[in-house]
Image (tube, rainbow, N blue to C red; front, top):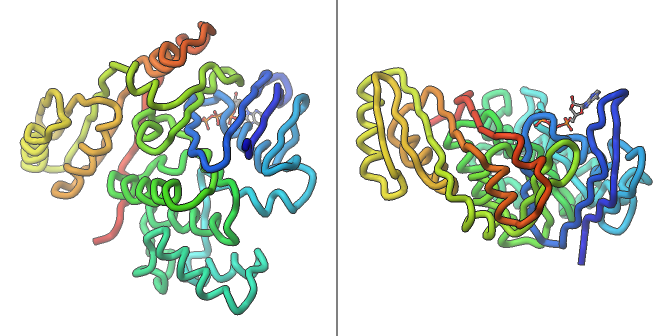
Length: 328
Ligand SMILES: Nc1ncnc2c1ncn2[C@@H]1O[C@H](COP(=O)(O)OP(=O)(O)OP(=O)(O)O)[C@@H](O)[C@H]1O
């Protein structure tokens, strides 16, 4: 059964046509990856899915209703925007309690519900610390926790790992993977990184120029995308770069490893890029990292056998800066 149906939707902002006849269906319980370059229309699509905006033309149905029509469907569909901030003086538990009250979770179930979510998002140990001291990754997982209050049917996650360090990305991936396995929540997850879509999603769509340029099972993509990715790591100390390069050479997923001064690079299959980041991040202090994935849309395009040439016109790469990981 489809929990999301988007049919021939268009949306413009003045002269800019953000969505141009986009159609999409998502079955209940699926984790769908939405891949697209900057400005492709992902955020505009997400805003329509959660009822923050209405299409100029076409229809959007989520959990059986038009999300712009009222609060009932919005209760069932939650959105984690790219940037979510919380009052720094409150604790993670207090913030979740507040959301549980707002979402009318009955008082006698509230504490248990909050506790369960804290465990789900891996914040049980930090529940009573002020969120002002949380790392970026912890903040992002708290955001996901607030989206889980009241057991929604659909989670819309807009580039949830952008700007996180390797530890933060891994922890977030673990939570999403576990939600995908253990619950029947439908997750729509956007990313500029094909590797993480391959890792977490069963299905993926490529959005280009406001349309779905290609769509299909991620497994098909994995088989066809012979492209290698390059993982580039920078360190503050040469000894770290040297140690990391040695660790990469020992790692089965690294195909070729190179090091110059403070930098180490490795090539790998796209899905293995984050394994390399995690392996190095455990022992070495990564200052910056970048995963480059050339020709992804073209590969996806070929994998799903569509004939729209526009998808191959846009290259894609992914960059993420280390901007604060989990405190030790
Ligand atoms: N409020 C707005 N006013 C004017 N133009 C907008 C507005 N929101 C989005 N756009 C434009 O619509 C197009 C699609 O933007 P959108 O944010 O949906 O893309 P995106 O795929 O989410 O991009 P990104 O990956 O950079 O977040 C872009 O050209 C963008 O500049």
